[in-house]
Length: 457
Image (tube, rainbow, N blue to C red):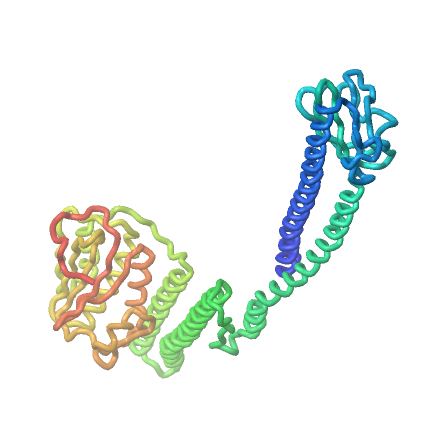
């Protein structure tokens, strides 16, 4: 069933539902029509029984209709009077050959009245409707042949048997056309999606005018295509920037090795070339490690070994890595964060290194609770970030070279943001008139009741 096209499945479901409805409707119409015919016949029989009962009460159990009385209106009507033994006391000519009721039916009629249908009441194969009532110790039976009613019902059955299937076929064709029309925008989107490729970026799927589910689907798919295009552009830019960043240390390394291979180099020159090559190798290793962290972060697979870490212990370890710089630690007692110790030290180390290299004056590393998070701040006393750089400072390979200089690859802040996201937090800068305040916000385990209103992102 799942391999059948949607429009066929919709049509089949529509046909099945409509078939059930039409069958039920046909049954109801036929039943109500048959019931209406029987009700009309029963009313006529009761009326005739009342008239004949009145005559019997006046003149005895002799039915005037036996000799052409006016109560016998047509050949379709007949009457009969039976005694308690089931013998015919009087009857019209059509009903004079045999009793219309048996002993059990006479007993039931004597209790009040009895209505029944007989397929061969007067003649074999000639259906009739009978009505029996007690009259002055006898049983009066009046009957009406139902040949005309049966012919009418047969005609109705023919009309329903032919008309309903035709209506079902026509409705099925209409349902298929409606399903095909409703799915036409989906097919248009499918054809357009087949044309989307890396060589043709910016393609958008056609959106129907109607404000319905298909339009919302198209809008969602177009938004997804836009995100994929943006991700593809970021990937291309990432590869291009990574290639550019790798080219510089590789070229320097090659140059140093080529110089070292010259025969006229002294031992000091050789040692200097090897030290320079080692530095370039370390730079390449750090760059490769940074790229690996970012790649794992993009895939959501950056490994973390979370543990409860006292914030003061974490910041003291980071400050100890920068003894040559003027780094101060300010942490309230009892503040604890949960995270990967090494990754958090790496992120904070990048912030401290950035502040020590590009900032000025002392560097302050602090932690403060705020609204269910712990903010880890790194502040310096430099000139601050350029306004046009702060918005994309955490993007990969972003550098404010014109304001701060430096020869890094521009991945340090991107790694800070990636580690913060992996911990369920975020990273940013707080606006300041002088200096730079970079922070990482992490979910807090213990939130102090004090310092809730401190400034932050």
